[in-house]
Length: 189
Image (cartoon, rainbow, N blue to C red; front, top):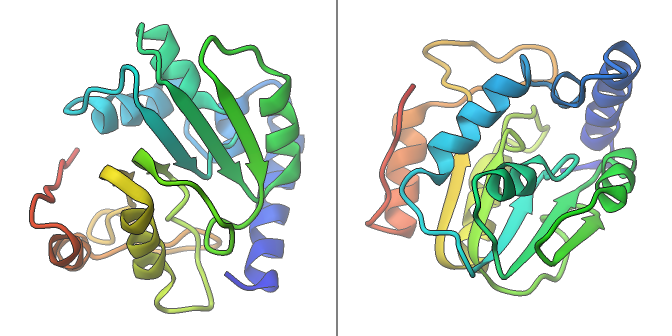
């Protein structure tokens, strides 16, 4: 993602943070905490995350780790990455039971350790001037994951791309993901 794309996303989140000072989920772009946690539930439903390593792309405030710990899941290690410095600063101030590291940077450019699972909840839904951005990010996630990649996307059939957000052709993303791993499947809803 180029600097102009990152600047536009940063502006989007600064504006939402000012507008929703006491609502972290809305500052991140979610409708509310319930909708954010519903997506986490769908992403985590079929995977055993106890005692494994997780890399969270676009971690925001570390809410995925909060969700896991609320549900009694203790990863061996958790690495959260976000390019918005205020999110990382707040995430570092939080107390978690699991070993957690928060890194401010661009996932596509960082040298990172391999992890069992790589998650991306919401972070692949930003417009990019690079038409291959989403597939490049998914491929990078697969390269880092020892076991699996777990991510969600906005469905272009239900919500067209607008403003800073990008929606995707789910069948095209599914076909590409199956090319990377034949064990890929889609959860809708």
